[in-house]
Structure formats: structure tokens, C-alpha cells
Image (cartoon, rainbow, N blue to C red; front, side, top):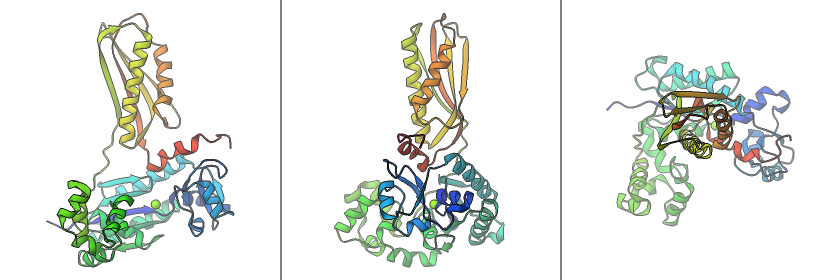
Length: 362
Ligand SMILES: [Mg+2]
């Protein structure tokens, strides 16, 4: 088996860096992107100047203000972050078609067998960081290794604006010394259980028999932990499949003229399709209603919004409106709902819901 060449690319303090890039007054200052410091908001991103005060993403803005009273608080501009993210994706696409985004600012690239840049993953990663800086004005860190886990760990080593390589020869020693909470895939709860039995480093994890790990964490996870302790991670870099639309439909057991029943079924489809879309970490700006009548005539009606639907309810309101303008004289046999004009909804984008309930005008 040929050795794989994997790059993990991670933008530095992404949202905060975009804000500092776009507003010179924020540069060199502690900046927090998130909700209202006097409300219930959380920190979406903090500049390195703010991190020096112990501000981290996902802590409350209230707590962030306590730790860093001089911080500047700004609201997130997700449309801008998404646009920059697409620019970065396009640059990554110049290196390889095997790009797996993890969020707006992070991705794995598989560059195995690529011949550009002398076939060197390290040169490719540095080209990537330079190209991103030249075209977006933003810095990124990269990790290079022969599997996903090690590449991800590596990108953190010389962050910000750095690169680190973990070669197969270095991997075993590197893993041995690594605290278990730094392993990608070992969560807080698992780390605690391991600490409880005296396991704190990769070396100690490696010495645990597979059977013990399976006992503790079940077959699948136990096996995975055992493998990563030995530097084995066979997970493939899964290129993002470009989905054009996500939809569901239902044929009624009996044709219906009942508005409430039909609308109820439309909402059901909207919730189901929205759920599927969210699970795939996508969001949409277009919703389409499809109705098939008893005579097998079929119509579709669409509505497009400026910013992606935040939840199924938002889409349902438009579906109700679209339905109101359809022919009410024909019995209906099928309804369907489809979301299209899809774009990636990052983990951070889902946090938007955490900001929204605060006063919008602020
Ligand atoms: Mg990042």
C-alpha cells in the first residue's frame, strides 16, 4: 500500500481574522465575534489578542467580557465568512479534487499521487497557505502527515500561521508522548474515563489491551482508539459530493381536498427534508412545493430567500404562501418539498441560532 499524503488546513481565528482584515480599527486589539455581551450570547470566535485573556469560543459573552473587559464585541457576518470559505475551497481545489471540508475554515486534503510542487505534500501545503494569504489576506496553519488524525494534530503544533509535518518515522514517538485529550476523536468524557484508569498519554493508551478498550467504549470506539494509539487511521478523505437539492414527497392513501390535511403533510415533508439537509450540514435559499393532482397533473412553485432558511418553520411559512396560490378545486394525491441552492452550513453557522433570540436590532 502506498503511503498516503494528507494535509489538514485550518484558518487562524477565522471569523475574528476576517473582521480584523475588513476593519483596520480592530487590528491588534482583542476582538470577540459573537452575541451581545450583556445578553445570553456565546463567543463564536476570538482574536489571538483576546485569547491571551483566556477567551475561547463557545464560552458565554458575559464570561468573555469578565475575562477581557476591553474587548471589542462584534456580531458575526456569516455571509462574508461563507464567501471567503468558498474562495479558500476554490484554492484547495487547485491542488486536489479530494477535499473534505469540516467547517467553514477547516478541511482535509488528500494529495497522494499529485505531481505538482515536486510531489511534496509539504510544498503543496505551503503553496496553499501562501495562495490563501495572497488572495484573501488571511493566514492559515497546516499539518502534513500520512493520515487524518496525525495531519489534524500537526496543524495545531505551529499555529497560528505555521506548518508542521509528522513523518511515518516520527509518528510512533510523537503519539507516545501525546496527552490523550489531544487525540482527534477522543472526546472529553472518554478522556476522563481513561484518566480514571490511569491512562494519560499515547504510550499508556497503546499498552492497553484491545479487549479492555472494547469493554470500556464498545466495539467500534474501542477498536478506533486502539488503532489511533498505534498511529493507524484508515479513514478516507471524503470529497464533498455536490448536492443540487434535497427533498421528500408523499403520496396520500386517498386523494384529498382538505386544506388542513394537505398543509399538514406539506409541513411534515418540509421538516423531514430540512432535517436531512441539516444532518448533511447544508443550508438552502430556495424551497419548492410540488403538488400532483388526482388527474396526474403536476405543478411546482418555488420561493427564494436572500439568506438561508434557519429552520424548517421559516421554510414552512413560505410553503403555506405557495400553497395558498395553487388550485384548490382539484383533489391532491401527492405533495413534495425540495430545498435547493444549497451551501455548506458550518458548525459555527448552526451557532447562529444561539445569537438570534437576542434583540436583533442591537
Ligand atoms: Mg480555525
